[in-house]
Amino acid sequence: MKKLLASLVIGLYLLRNQLLRLWRKLRGVKVESPDKVERFAAQVRLEGLALLPPERAADFTALQRCIRCGLCDLLCSRAREAIDLAFYQGPSLLASTHSRSLPELSYARAYLESYGSCAACTRCMEMCPTGVPIKQVVEHMERMTIRPEVKDAM
Image 1: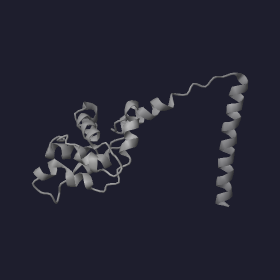
Image 2: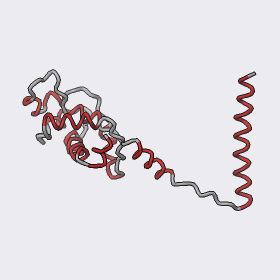
Image 3: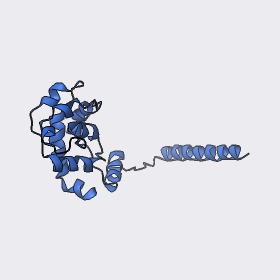
């Protein structure tokens, strides 16, 4: 009985919305709805996340290819300088945590503070089986960690 009642209520609600839409259309009432992209961006800002700029979208697609094989970590010249290799998080950390919303930016910040910036030797990129542009990832993360709006949000 509860299922039937719930289905009926949902059906009536959907019918009501469709009838209201039709009524507005027939009357020529233009309903102004906020831009969906702007609403999304506002929500993202409220949650303290950073939006990926449109010009970085192609790079993001390349970054998604990271399979966390760890080969880049083995070749990283910064790894040789790490005091404790058991806890060393190499370039694979940055490549795999670089996401559109950057929720794990604090890990990247800790990595950059602990081991410094990329040595730019590109050995990691040469060894990467999926062709992730790790050097660009590190450079982007370095830029993102100093952006005040991201820093304040984290």
